[in-house]
Each structure stands twice: as structure tokens, then as C-alpha cells.
Length: 471
Image (cartoon, rainbow, N blue to C red; front, side, top):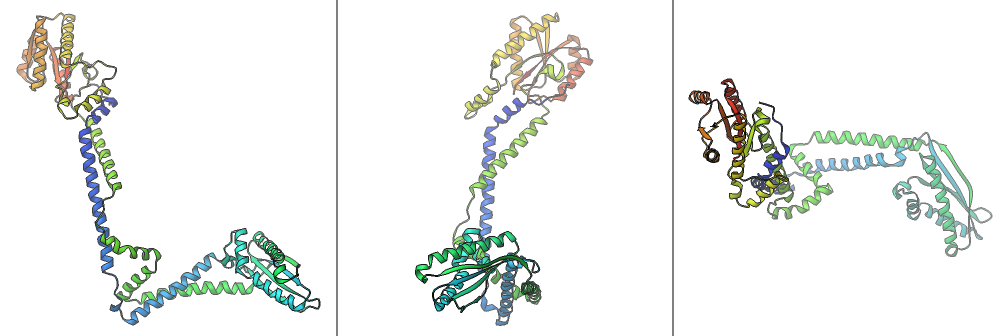
């Protein structure tokens, strides 16, 4: 027996013809996953109900237990604030020994000393006010709370003889370019305010007396950074120490209260009554997933069934498989037409037989009989013996029709309704010396047919050819 190859077109057609069972499998998969979705929804609602029913009743905890937990919560709040400041503050990221510092000294002049003093006070407020911080945010994208700790009003000198006052503004940053850009923006802001405030404050001038950019060190910043880092370590240690002393009830109270501080958990808690009042839901997404998973599994099973199939198929060829002349293939009873929506099966089969003439069973029988007759003439034979692989009713019917066609041609035909493994049949065949094999697809095993052919060859019985009857 030769090696069998996968006929992909036949495989696809066989799978398409299983569309009824495929639909059933898809429905079952959808129903199964819908059930899973329902159970998950039900369990989620039950869990939420359980959480709500087990919500902590504060009256069951003593005041001491509540106080112990509240102390830890307050420590954690301070710890989170300091840790967040340590991580995101520009000052905390600076190297205290190498800080970029820009200084701007402004001289404010007017025609009156007291008036200059009052104007200078207004400019002081503008330099540390929210309007400047928002203006810098628009220009540089730095948040006001960040800018506020980078700009510092360092001092002023007033009461000068010419009726003028001065003030000094400094900007600190670890990046030289950013520091310079902020200082230039402050200068632009002061000039803009000077022009816009002439009518409100009276005629005055704001003159830049000095402008510098240098690298400085800051021992106070170093101490601030060190203090903040030590506070974080101390708080973390203290929190761990206090939580280690919690009783089971205090842990229960802590978990409930700390969870409720979480904004996300608060929203969930607000929705609990609404969820509890709902009935379990079935997710349409789960239904689709179930149907897809079921059909994929079904196709996988069909593929391997086709691969490991050990029986003859409708499209097999005796010559390709066994080196026995293929006399023809006879379609079996067209069962598909007896099923509902059989026109769909017809359309699928047309795909398989496209560009080919589809013979009816009667036409195929006549062609097979003519092929037998031709082979008999070729081998100068007068009689032919038909060996039927099994006693299937359909197979017997086809054999009878072949014999009827051959009889019209006055050809003697004998039908042997048994396997060649039967010694009596072998003795009968030895006398007649020739045989035509007829096997039914779906019933005959590949290996059995191969063994039959091998035995016939060993007995020197000539095999005229083979016919495959569809199932």
C-alpha cells in the first residue's frame, strides 16, 4: 500500500458537510459559556453582598482599638505626603552643593518716597502671587505648586533719598537653562505689570539694577532634604511597629477603614446597593467566546478524525493506493438529500465537483461495467468474478446492478460475498483465476484491503481492477 496524502479540498468539503453538527456545537458552546458568565456574575454579586453584610460595625470595637488604628492611619497619611513630596519636589531633587541660582534686583522709582514704598509692596505681592505662577505655567508648563518653591523674595531696600525702593527676587533650579528661562520670564512679567499698572498706581519706573546667574550651595536645603528623608524612614518604621502590635480585631478594623479611604473603593461602596439589587447578568462577550472556542475545538477534532481515518474514503483511487487498476467510483445513496436543508449540502458538493461532471449512481455503474468489459477484452477473459468486501445491503445492490449491465453484454459473472480470508473462497478463486474487487467507502479498512490484495497476488489470482462504492 502506498503512502496516503492529505487531500485538503476533500478535507474542507468533509468539514463543511458537518455544518449541522457544527451549528449544534456552537450553540452548546455559547450556552456553556453563557452559564459560566451567569455563574461568575452571580458569584460577584454574592461576594459584594457578603462584603456589605460583613461591613464593620464600629460599635463592636473599643475606643482604644479605634484609637490605635487611627494613629496608624494618621502616620500613614503623613508618610504618603512626605514620600510624595520627596519623589516629585524639584527642591528635593537638587544637589545642595551645586544649585543654579538666578537673582534679579529691581529699583522702583516714583515722584514720592511713600508712594514708592507702597508700589514696592504691591510688586512684592505680585512676585509671590498666584498670577505670576499661573503665567509661568502657561509659558513653561511648570505647575504653580512647583514654581512657588523655586522663587523667593529675598529682601528690599527702601527709603532712598531719590524716593525709590528696591527688591530682590531669586530663582533656584538644578537645571541651568530652566533657571535662566524662569528668570527671563519673571523679568518680562515685571515689565508687563509695570506698563499695565501705570494708570492704577500712578507714574513709576521699574528698573533692573542687577541680573546674575551663578552656582551656589545651600546648607538649609541640605538640612531640609536630610530632615525629610529621616522623617520618611522614622514614619515607615513607626507604622510597621504599630501595625505589628495590632490584634486581629484591630487588623479587621484597619483593613475596612483604610479601604474606605481609597477613592476607587469609595465609588465601589457607593454602587454596592445598586449591584445587589440587580440579578446576575449573562455577558454577550462570553457567548461569542464560547461559540468560537467550541467551533475551533470541533474543527480540531474533525481534522484529526480525518487524519487518523483508517477506512476508505469516497475520493480514494485504487490505483494510487494499491497499484490496482481503478475501474471507477460509484456514488452511494444520496443521504444528504433526505436531510432538512439538503440544498445547502448540494451547494457544498458542487464546490467539490466544480468543473467536473457529476455522475448519478446509474451512470457510474454503467461506466464501471464498461471498464470491466474493456479490461476483460484486454486480458482475453470470458467470465469475471466480483469479490465483495462485505455483505452491506447497498454494496450488494450496486453489485447486482453491475452484474445486470454485464449480463446484457452476455458476460458471465459470479459474485463472491465473502472475504478472501475465507479458505473456501480462495479455492474457488484459484479455479477462476481473476477477480474484480468492490469495496465500500466508510466500511473497508485500508490495511484489510491491502492484505486482501497481497493474498490474491500470492495465490496468483489476477486482479482485473477495483471499484469503490460511496457511502
